[in-house]
Image: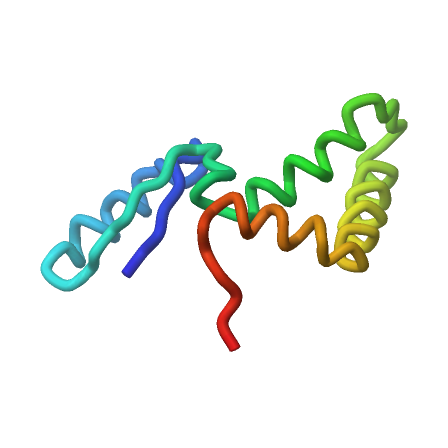
Length: 94
């Protein structure tokens, strides 16, 4: 089973060829490119991007550091993670 969002990178020919070559056994569920109601990762990235909106970084290193810092902050806020998960209707397994 492949859960696949429609991000432009994922639409490249090699991936389409792989799906076509394995169509007899591969089940593909396509999601929209951005779907926080279906994919909790999109909710997390939305929280990260919200903090980076006004960042005037001089280079990629500063951006990377800011993303890592925000992800670390979110990691210690289970309520934020739970909120992103709850928005999908999914539940954490035991």
